[in-house]
Length: 298
Image 1 (cartoon, rainbow, N blue to C red):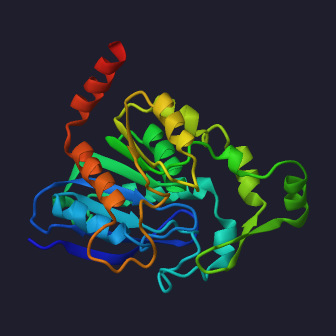
Image 2 (image 1 turned 60 degrees about the vertical axis):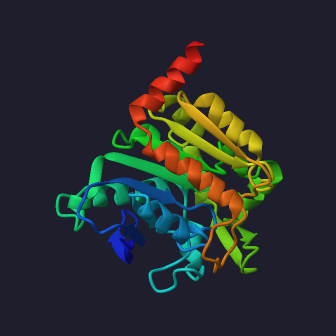
C-alpha cells in the first residue's frame, strides 16, 4: 500500500502565528504509533531529506508528523523561504515548546480526522539539532510521550548565547544578525530571545530535563559533525536514565543530506540512522527501559 499524505495543514498555535504541518501514513484504518518530528535552527519541515524520512517511516507502519515552528521564518504561503523576518526575530525556545504542545494536543483531539489511525498510547518525539533540545524538554514534561530520539542534538541552550561585551551590545541595540549560509540572508535575533531564556532558564535546562526522563532515549550523532560537538551526545547519554547511543562514522550534522534533496534514496549515513531508529521505535518501550536498567545494574 502506498503512503497517503495530508500536506500543509494549518493549525493555530498560542502565539498568533499559524503552525503548518504534514501527516504521512498508510491509510489502512489501523491505529499506528505516532512519530512527531521537530526541525532545527534555521530549519523547516520541507528541508532536504525530512520528507523521504517521513515516507520511509510511514511505509514501516508509523503515523509520521512534521511541522514548522510558528516563528521559524516561513509561512503557509512560502514554506521554504525565510520571508517572515520579524517572526524569526521574535522566536524563542518557549514559543517552540508551546508549538510542539499545540501539535500534540491537536493530534489527540477527539474529532481529529484520523483518530482511528493513531495509537494514542504510543507517541514518540524525534528532534534534529535545536529541535532535539526542544524534544528533550517536552518529553520530560509531557507524560503522553513514550519514546525520544535526538538526532545531532544540542545538550545546552545557555552556552549558545553571547557573553560580555557582545551581550551588552545586543541589549543596547535590541537586535543582532546571523547569516543564513544557504540563502545569504541576514536574519535577526531580537534581545527578547535572551531575556525570555533567562526568565525561563529552569524550564529550559536540557540537563535537568534529560535526567528527569522516564522513557527510552535514542541519541544519534555523527562523528564528523562540525555544527554540534559529538561531546553533546556524550552529555545526553550521561544524563538520560535509559539512553542508547548511536554514533555514525563520518556522518556530518545532517547525515549526508542537503537541500534540496532530489534523489530517491537517502544518503548511506542517514539510512544507517533510520534503520536503527526504526528498530528502536518498533521495540517495546517497557522492554527497552528494563534493558537499560539491567545494564546499569551490571
